[in-house]
Length: 199
Image (cartoon, rainbow, N blue to C red; front, top):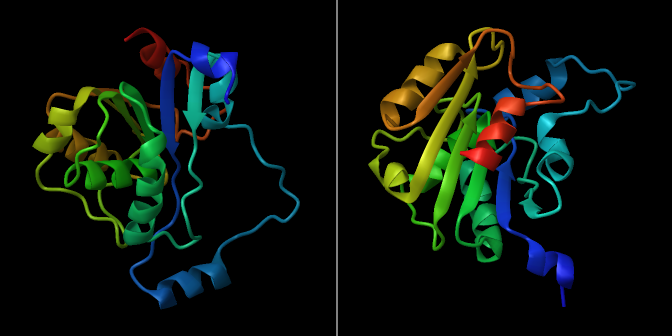
């Protein structure tokens, strides 16, 4: 029994985080050998870790920890599907970076058994590693009532041209362009919260 708080929940958000995907195992191993590390760096505060505080207790947050350091689309699909039975009608989906790529790839081929109230794609890459980028976004647009894209022109990880690919794929989406957000690793993202709670 989940109790009164669960019964009072008005909305649900599912967040799919980013990650690294490589074309081959050797490329992955080379990255492990050469990437810069800081073993003393503290975990930074990020907007997506603050959903319970920024959205409030009437929101249920599902944050699947997607499998693998070297992300694989098939593995992510299997794990994502394990979470679908917990989703409810009117869900809000948020994908960041590779998570955005995953959501468009998956939703272009599959139909969720629940309605998608909003789809938010933040700093999304347009195809990398084993993650395909769809050629047709009509099935995505048919499932999501509202679609929002967010990208910054100073993103050092995913070029802004990828945002234009998303906009071409999803012409009904609203594209918000920033100049100073980088790869959206800040502690706050008020524009996203405003749309989730008021759009």
